[in-house]
Image (cartoon, rainbow, N blue to C red; front, side):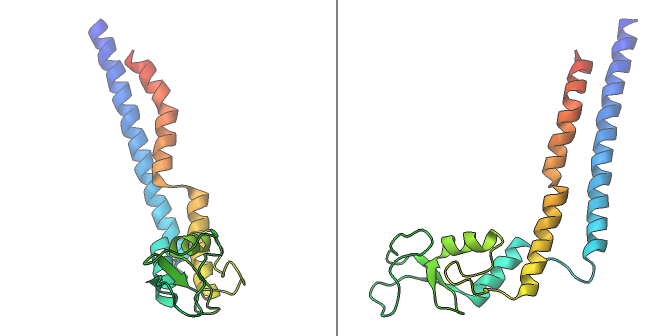
Length: 162
């Protein structure tokens, strides 16, 4: 009798795990399909595409000591530029920053020069990038869904195993 009870407990656990995985796959499929319809015709851009556009419009270079008219300090972090350090100059206003400082600023939903606030990218590009970020923030990532589902079922599965 104990063997039959243990068999049904294990069968119940396997069924719950299978149904949870099936639900997760269906949820991921639904998100990808609904996202495709939501963005159809006005597709958002990824972070990688966003930074490629920044790089194309304002390419990074290496700092060289002694160039005339070149600032010697990054206005964001207030540290001095070092020889051969990566910098990025905003073409629209000629302000120069450490590449990492400016890229971090631009990634934080501020597509403007940190000093003069001139736009670094066209507004339609920024809108598409924000659209992608807002959609991901709303739905969360697939990994977050998996953690939530495992947390919800984790306690129940542990009780069944004992």
